[in-house]
Image 1: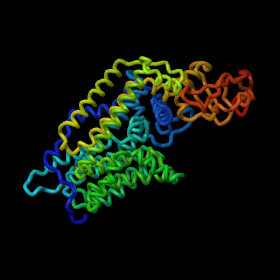
Image 2 (image 1 turned 135 degrees about the vertical axis):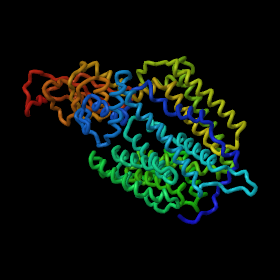
Image 3 (image 1 turned 90 degrees about the vertical axis):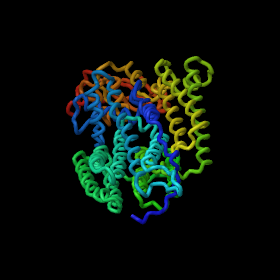
Image 4 (image 1 turned 60 degrees about the horizontal axis):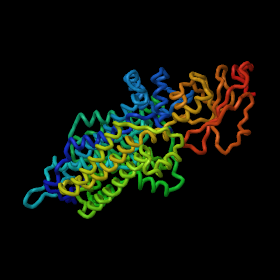
Amino acid sequence: MTPQQPTPALVASRAAQRLPRAALLLLCAAYVLPGLFGRDPWRNADITAFGYMLDLARGGDLFAPQIAGLGADGALLPYWLGAAAIHLFGLMLDPALAARIPFALLLAGVLACTWYGCYHLARTAAAQPLPFAFGGEAQPADYARAIADGALLALIASLGLLQLGHETTPDLAQLFAVSLYVYAVASSAWARWPSRLAILVALPMLAASGAPSLGLVLAATGGVISLRSSYPLARGFSGWLAAAAAAAAWAAWSLGTWSWRLSAPDDLMQLVQLLGWFTWPAWALAGWTLWRWRRHLQHRHIAVPGSAALVAVLACAGMEASDRVLMLALPPLAVLAAFALPTLQRSVAAAIDWFSVGFFTLGAVAIWVIYASLQLGVPAKPAANVMKLAPGYPGGFSALGLGVAVAGTLAWLLLVRWRTGRHRSALWKSLVLPACGLTLCWLLSLTLLLPVLDYARSLRPLVARVAVHVPPGACVVAKGLPRAKLAAMEFHGGWRMLATSSNLAPAGCDHLLVATRTRVPTAALALPGWTLLARERRPTERDEQIAVYRRASREQPDSEGGAGSAR
């Protein structure tokens, strides 16, 4: 490492007060738990991953789970976790809820690893604030706790984590693995065995969740940082990084997760826009950290999170600006953002506070107005707009959800009063309102508006429309349907699905589903050997439809080795 430079942080002891633990834990619970209960798996990645988990739980091949005969992409570890939870809790809970339990724990683990990783980095000598001439500066442990509280708040305030972090997908397992890596490298200067065990879990888990190349790059960057460290334990950690990288490579080879998926984004501006909103507000504070701590870029508290964030951002750029890859940058960006807090000017902190109060209060009011319109009909316009966007919505009410929403709103009002009245010296004060405001809007949306959101994002309404024409337990051939809809047909409909690229169907499969567009005329959907029963679509979709067919003649002989004729 380079010789230590004076730090830009000036922190008095009163500013290093920690956020009350009860309040912090309550905030984390309010962030993690909404969306865990009372909903179906949502369309696209959420229901697709759940479909593979359900196949494993029902006795599918442990190394080759399928949806309608279509295999998984190799990210097997997350599917094993969900399937194990279904096995453990399936008799007591709905399978979808059971599968979400380990992923809620993973999200909680992401928050915990971010806090502890930042804490260990803030304990290093290069990260400590300047001492005062007559004393009164923050003590190292108090300062580190306050910085770690700020990192946790910055992560919760990140827009990109909100939805993707609450899904049941391999991406959340990757996110936990990256945050565990940050913790392992950060703590390697202090905690001998916890850091070693963490890295031996993090990199193989990243490989088994579908990102082995990212794990190897992180191992290489972490090894360089460790070898250049002034801490003896950290220098010895490079060998453990090499061992973890070897284990990750073996896991990737064993599970078949190696794949070449690099592809530059078509529009560079799309990548810039994604970076701008997805990582807000962490990127702004992280950028300020890099500027104010520019003489400390090679020290651990900047190099560890900075390199991890850079690797994830470059991977995002190399995978067509994938937001799911960019999500892996959020924990290290949050750690970087926390080190901006000791250097923020009071006017900047005040601007963040007032923006957060205005923006999130308006958001909460809007959610309450929509809820009142749906339940009471006053005002009438919001409910009319909802019914236009989600036609056929049957309505719904939850007394428990209403009670939780009221409690969350009252807590927000008390927080605003607290923040604008007292305790203005706390180091983490500038991130309390953004984190709590975003959590409030998420909490209100997933309590007050959960029935309409579930109706709009679940595929159950589509399956219910198809079920009018297909009997329970039937064998159904599907042509052109994505994996998400196939998984929904198997779970909600209880049908035995078989994906195909032709109109041929094996004996015993008397129903056919074909993906089509609303603009296609009905006459163009005629298929030899099949009778068109209906054209159905999800209520909130406008362009995509499913054409439902029944075999025209069940006595027709099979062709091509048992496949039913398509005449």
